[in-house]
Image (cartoon, rainbow, N blue to C red):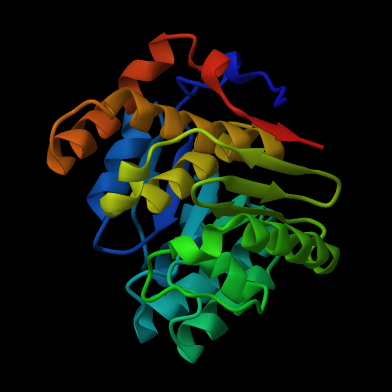
Length: 269
């Protein structure tokens, strides 16, 4: 079973300042999610600010959704600087596999040795050069069959040999986490979490916030994924997806008042 010091994680102490270069579609949702758990977001993508900004921030989130030439320059500049100054960094491979341009940008960010690389199961299959049934930025249920999951886990284990400083997260019906020494499967969550935009972006931001608070990489990934999935479980009885979305976000600031960690499901080895 999963063992970590969940009870000491939320609300976040001392409000870590998280620098987010994320997509405009979910920018406000991500910023609010960070505020709800006690972090402080700064949504800055102008690379002219980075040298000064990096002196004040605690962690970095790089999201390749809604890509443009200008956004590519910002993402690459931030990733290189983060590597140079050893800033805790999360790279979110949104839509990896959609185009050669997006894949090239994603690969370039991963080469800068971020703390965490995340994506849905289909995006990670593409990154591992496995076939995928995904279309666009959403994962495919066909990529989440038992045999496909086992295939992905083996590929991710091979991947960390090339990137030993990075923890990889593939989200889906099961959430798969692999680092140099261990692997985990988390099984909290509800299907409706796949039916509103920004859920993966929020998880990436929560991981970055935990890293910025000094939480270890493994604990940060497990905790962020589990906490958000449990927020969805608390909201599952709401009628209508709009109401479900609102209550899931509401639970980000509510669930921390309960012994939420006792409901974490999964295992590792």
